[in-house]
Length: 297
Image (cartoon, rainbow, N blue to C red; front, top):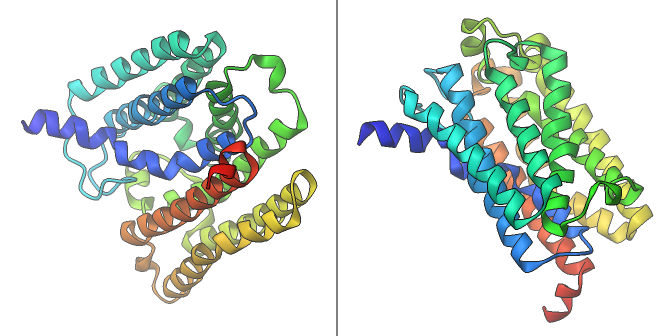
């Protein structure tokens, strides 16, 4: 029972909630939503692909202290490794059957990059700048495009247009701002593994300042995007939705400035939860407001 429980916990399926905004943003701008593709792409990405990545990384990291979505991680086992590969394989097969070849290929690429993140032969995680850039690109614009393909069933030619690439790039900017915060409480554990993350390079206070600047840049870029492609009112709604996130972040920043030990797992997870809740709520609103679905509400 402990064996299976360890596998389930390390898959960290609830953690997919924190990554859901990217999918909902892709959904909100999708012109060719199919009910079957919507359901299957959602299941494949959030219940197979993301858990497979979580489990694989947990297996090679073998963290003993808190990790994203798991305060007290149990010891990993070989079953976790095999389960993560099985989930990846099922995701790719279902992606091919239920959507198309391009979606399946993108699932495969995402899986390979996520494995390179923690595998000792590559371990992207140990490179502060390179790891930060790669994760922002793949969990940002690449994942956005993958979700867009999964939802719409499009081919490559449909992706090369400003109305798709611009919001995709915006998700990367948001991820580049958020990613260092996921590392701010793990300096000791990362150092033990020989990793130098961007948060370690910046320091605890430096991480907060860096994230604050990038968050402001991202907010301005999103407002400009909504003003150009939709309405300025939608941009204001986006800023309003982020209000609770900014408030929590600033209060936490104040605590950390006085006491660095406040940069801990609990506050990090609360920031992730609040930001995900606000962004998920906004993108659902954005989808309802800009699609034909909205007329039924």
